[in-house]
Length: 304
Image 1: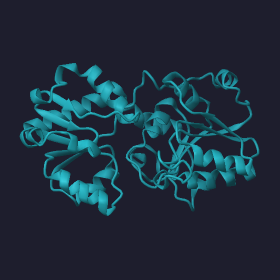
Image 2 (image 1 turned 180 degrees about the horizontal axis):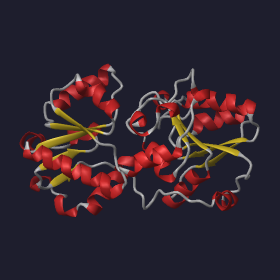
Image 3 (image 1 turned 90 degrees about the vertical axis):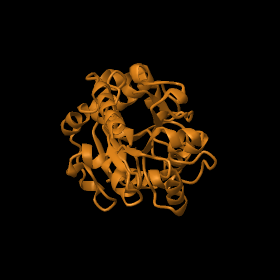
Image 4 (image 1 turned 45 degrees about the vertical axis):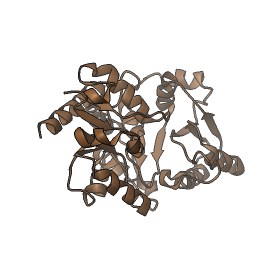
């Protein structure tokens, strides 16, 4: 069995997934599509760049991360579905979203979390000193983008930065020790709003993995406020670093978080993190275990 992974170069989680897969699964991975038994469309929006002769003559597995239900996305799915033999999704939520659009087999497996990169660090005091974070501050994290690439002003609504802002505003009224920790590109919407409202924040635009792991370990709470998600991978990263997290009911959240940690905008005040519960759930998907699940999935596909 040889697997060819479609190209992607977007500085996104899937780029890292592809690199880690190739590094650890050289025995079943090929860089030559002609030699492959399976073409893994890991970047579904780039499927048209794969020559149709290979889409017609290979076993085609396509990963789908989320489905917004729009006419454009539905139309694209239907066109691509003609060439796809099997689907992989990273959450049961996504499986439900696309199951009515295809009669092809759909396998749900979250992307693995690299426990060599992300892990718990007990010495929180030293970490906060390292990053000049007041030891008494209540630190809330958000590490995903909140605007589009071409528009650095309007909120990316599927990611819910407007919701995050509403929650932070209300929490700040109750606790003036609150600070927000942001990382990543395209955080302009929240940064501008925090400046307007005089809400203290710390921003690391780009970080290496060592820094990112340490920043997770500085947090008192991570909040996912998305309306639509594939993962998000932050849920598993919070889990394995034992970072307290609450989330809307998106992506993999109901599979990893307890019910008490999942909220809507009328109930976020009552949401409670449970780090030990989420840690135990996330351990199932550490890199070695998680990649083995994918290997077994591909074996099943090729045998069918």
